Length: 228
Ligand code: ADP
Ligand code: ADP
Image 1: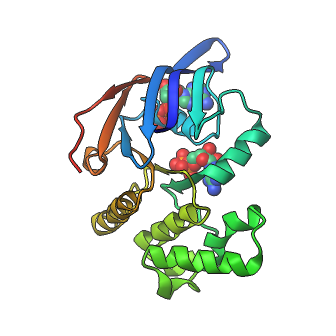
Image 2: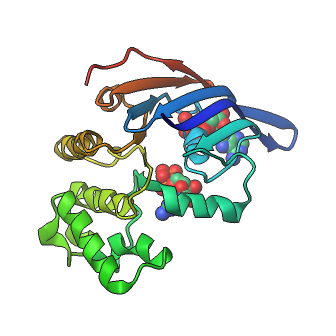
């Protein structure tokens, strides 16, 4: 069944005299357990689409359903709740807190969710084990390589057991070896049944996904499905 479904999504930015139509009628359905890449050049509307997919913003027109819930008209507080409960984010810049250990960084979403301390600890340790960093739990981000930092942020994305993993240029700051490691990790998560949407401008990264959707000037077109 479709985990997320967008129908006729438009996004217009008002910048005084001119209006920019960043999304011009986007239809997109992603099935539970799918691994989809959204690929497009700079200025094509990727960030705008990512913000709507991630419930960081709402469409100007059209509908977006996530996990059976229409989120297109929600208030900021309602959106924040959906984000915290249903989405795990992975960013290009890792967005780890430098003063905290890997374990504390991964625990953080559970702090916001009100999970008790002992359970937090256990789940964060398990998530770090899952990404191959059981022996780095007490390291701070500055003591880890870029690839390891991104794996910490994947652990942070997983720890709440989200319906959707949303990765925005997750390999954009990584060398080719670390890029390979992180994409390998996404493959493992997909094999384990996770739903992943990955946004990238790089064809080599996009083709790692099971399905590639292209975005050009605010419109989507489906590429050939890559056999899994
Ligand atoms: P991408 O992430 O693919 O580079 P964006 O979604 O950032 O694309 O941008 C799509 C279009 O919308 C571009 O023309 C961009 O200039 C415009 N745009 C994005 N954000 C804003 C904004 N906050 N105000 C005005 N225009 C914007
Ligand atoms: P950029 O790649 O443009 O530097 P990021 O990918 O770091 O931006 O962040 C994209 C968007 O997600 C930003 O609008 C940011 O405010 C938001 N964001 C960043 N970190 C988080 C987070 N941990 N949870 C929710 N939203 C976040």
